[in-house]
Amino acid sequence: MKIVNIVPGFGGTFYCGNCLRDSGYTKSLIKLGHDAMMLPIYLPLTMEHGVEENTTPIFFGAVNIYLKQNFKIFKNMPTWMEKMFNSSSMLRYAAKKAGSTRTEGLEPMTISMLQGKEGNQEQDLQELIDFLKVHEKPDVVHLSNALLLGLAKQIKEQLNVPVVCSLQDEDVWVDAMNDHYKKIVWDLMSEKGEDVDAFISVSDYYAKEMKQKMRIPDSKMHIVPIGVDADLYKYAKPLREPQTIGYISRMYEEHGFGLLIDAFIELKKDAQFKHVLLKLSGGYTADDKKFVNQQMKKLKKAGLLEDVMIIEDYQPENRFKFFNQLTILTVPVLKGEAFGTYQLESMAAGIPLVQPALGAFPEIIEKTGGGVVYSPNTVEAMVSKWKEVLSDPEKIEKMSEVGSKAVREKYAVDPVSEKVLSIYESLMK
Image (cartoon, rainbow, N blue to C red; front, side, top):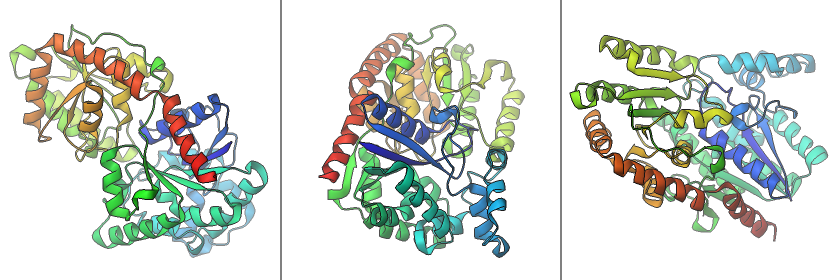
């Protein structure tokens, strides 16, 4: 089967769970004997996608579509100019700019992309479809997220193939908009969802959320969790001395990074936990730099900088080294997440979770036994749960063993990919 995954590049400046999901699926499908590929839009694919170098064209180049959307003078720019703005060097520069992952200012472009042929990117859409017709001839096209639904109708009509769409954390982008834009975008996503043959949510929690927000019928909704290659995360028992709390995700406010820092400062006031360390990884954007610096200043003021380490290398092939330095992992995302791939990675490496009871976190922890949850998502509740868990090393080791086993049995990437394949096959019949 020929499968094309259309995925947004993101620049590679931070840990991206959706990118890990897409690259994991694609590599697994190839391993299972299928002709699968990732087709990048906006920005180049990165090492976080599991690829070293992009060998396919980049469609809807971020610089080109931004200029066309915002400046009339660029709507009919000559071919040479489009190629210049779509060059690797120009797109790498754009990826590093502040605001490239921020909703504010990109609401009209989000709407235009969802409008598909009726939006400002009609020419870009046709170029993508022509490329698929001539070079790829897919049996199935899989959209990485629901913000790409504007592509679906033309792909179905011109290629006559099923279109599938993954669902994971689109609400983070849309709900950051003001009420005016938010309603327009959710309504558009609901309308354009009718052009898709099947949706695949990564968790029960998120399927319920998106069925309501996008009015998706039960017949189109499928639930397939994220899968990981557990063997990449070399299992080791959680560190006993010194006990170490870990965080791996984009370092910004919405992922609870500031909350985590405040909780660590509070924990260290208790003499029983004065030797506990904090290790951080996952990177951040130019937009986040000021916020991260503020957190470092808080640690310095508390005299705790020497107890905190930022691990710069979070590339896939080396990520197990980060987990093998930990006792527990906490990523206190303020509103929870649709899944949280780092949870599977952490448990595969033997590190239990201490997570807020939000989003899909309780669902994953209940299905694996590899951690505990706390509520509400406050400094006080986080510190209380940390103290409880860190005071019981035997329980930590038990959760380590149970969680690692569950990931290997329930979230192995190849069986998960086979579930996705069965959805493709049912649509093709």
